[in-house]
Image (cartoon, rainbow, N blue to C red; front, side, top):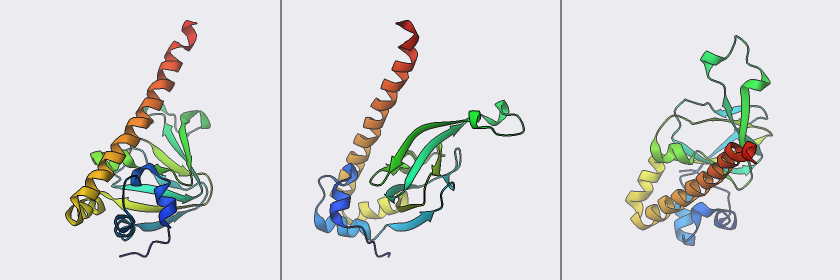
Length: 166
């Protein structure tokens, strides 16, 4: 198991860990794996498998979508990429794939040098065997975070759809 250097105060600042005890956090930290990325590096590729959630310790990332290959010419241009959102220290990404075990819905690019700790769906399963209450609390917190992001996306979409209808 890995030795995680994140302090519990940092974890408590994240919604995923709300309602957990110090001893539960200490157990969860044993599953974390540190990963480092250079500026410009693609962390996750759209449509490829992912089985982990990323907790950004330092750095900035962009969640990006690219135009479908069939719509692209031979060269990819800046117009073929759209930034959906940006995250920084204290944020997470990969929640959807952790839960639904589907390919990545978008790509993730490190905009600066980025350090993240990851937690896999296998780790989540192991956690359920260790303490079902802790597992349930994390799943509930994940659901709340995904719901919050869906509300933001819905608001942005409705704003975009109605902007020309003054």
